[in-house]
Length: 79
Length: 172
Image (cartoon, rainbow over all chains, first blue to last red; front, side, top):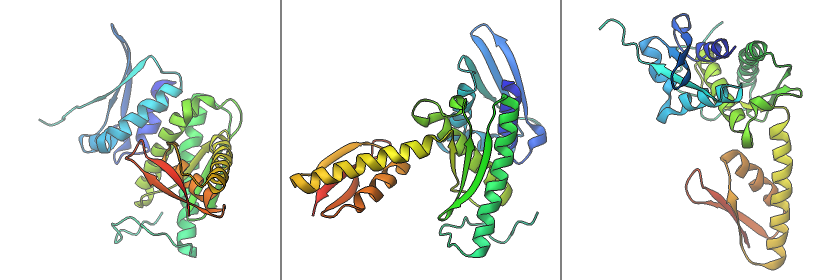
């Protein structure tokens, strides 16, 4: 559920919704939701002073993912 | 869907003429779609009310069992409002000032703050000495300013820097 919720929240705010993927990974430090977006959208999901990333984390925390980290992965495609 | 591509700047001052009215209604619809899908995914029950309050779209998720979307002091609600505004902005191209409420949280908070502001204003009017309130968000300060404005013999001012900005009530 958490991946699907995060994917929906991110897709709604970016210019390239089809290129949004979210993967839930089990790491030694705990569970991590890895978000990948089109490189042009990275700034959008981070937001001014990290505001949007903070909002995404807050909502995911509320939805029961308090022990889940949200990572925005810089893919840097085509380099 | 038509988006006016010639207007690249956000509408700073939205007057309540019919064109802006339809923009606000559209904002409500876009927000409702965004939230509806989230509720579905999270398996939460809630009805979505869309309204226009003054120069803003007002969207409320109504229902019980929505605490997960409110959070401590409404922090999760504020975050969800931020994301909803961005989702609206992406579709309309206009920066949104939409107000989101969940489970009546803001409505309750508005009542509390109105009471608090009125009581403090009455104290200042009677005692003649100024009073400094706790730090509040811009949304909260607006409610208190409005409540104090309804009491004769006092004035308000905000002092300090965000996020520790607070209201001072003074006798006039």
